[in-house]
Length: 77
Image (tube, rainbow, N blue to C red; front, side, top):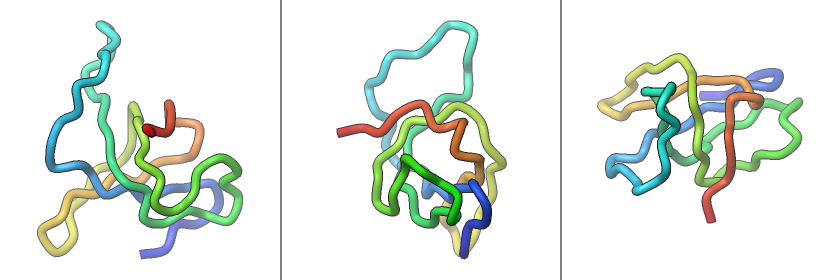
């Protein structure tokens, strides 16, 4: 899979991480960036990221999320 423009493809974490959750948001998640579009400035392949929204899909039994870079809330260290 190859991300285009400012899109990022994230492989969702299997385990949940104990992160704070904003009360008005139900769909917060974490995962590893596996493909980064050429216009992404702050995220690199392999970054463990925290995000809010995106288009979820499955491929070969794995869960992925496709989103634009502005929907990344932070990089976990």
